[in-house]
Image (cartoon, rainbow over all chains, first blue to last red):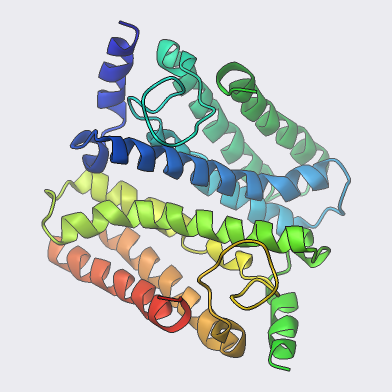
Length: 156
Length: 156
C-alpha cells in the first residue's frame, strides 16, 4: 500500500488542525484549490523576476527586491495542500496535475519543497545587495527547483 | 470621468513593470485571477485563526503563530491585482465581485489595505507571546478589516 508511508508522514508534517481533523472529499478538494491558488500567487511573483533576469524588462532594484521578498514569503505556503487523497488518480472532484508519484516519493518531494524555500530566501537576500549577476544566477536556481518538481511530479 | 483619478493613483502605486507596461484584456483578467488567488490564500490562513479564536478548535500556540505569520506574509499581496479596468462593470472576461466603487473611493480602499497589513502584523507579534485573550481580540480586529472592505466594495 504505497499510501501508508505517505499517510504517516503527511500526518506528522501537515499538522494543521484544520486538515488533521478532517478528510472529507470537500476538504480534500479545498486543499487542492488552496495549493493551486498558492502556486499561482508564487508564479505571479516569479514572473517579473524571470523577465528581469532574462532582460525582457529592465532591471529595477526596488521592484526586484519586492518580488524576491514576496516570493520568499510564499515559498513555504503551497505544500500543506498536498494532503492524503489529493493526487491524480485519487477520487476527488477537482482537477489536479499532481501525480501519484508524490506519495511514493514523499521524502524527495519534501526535500524539493525545502530546496525552493532555501533558494528563495537566498534570492531575497541577494536582492538587498547590488550584484545583479548573482541575482540573475539565483533566479535561475529558483527556476530550476520549480522545473525539477514539475518535471517529476506534474502531469504534462 | 471617475476613473481618471484612479488611473493616476493606480499608475503611481501599482508600479509593477508587468502591469504598467501592459493593459490588454488578457492582462486585466490575469490580474483579477491573481488577486482572487491571493485572497483565497489569505482566507485559508485566517480560517484556523478564526476557529481557534472562537473556540471551534483548541488553541495550539505553534499552529496559531504559524498561521498568523503566514497571514502577515500575504496581507499586502492581493492589492496590486486591482488594476485599472478590473472592476465589476468594466469590460473583461473574468467574473469579479469587486465593485466599481473601489475606483471612486480609491484612497479609502488603500487605507483599508493598509489597516489589514497593520492588524495582521500586530496579530503575528501577539502570537509570539502568551496572551491568548489579546490574540483573540486581535483576530476580531483582523476580521473587522476584512468585513469592512467586503461590506463596502464586494458584491453580495
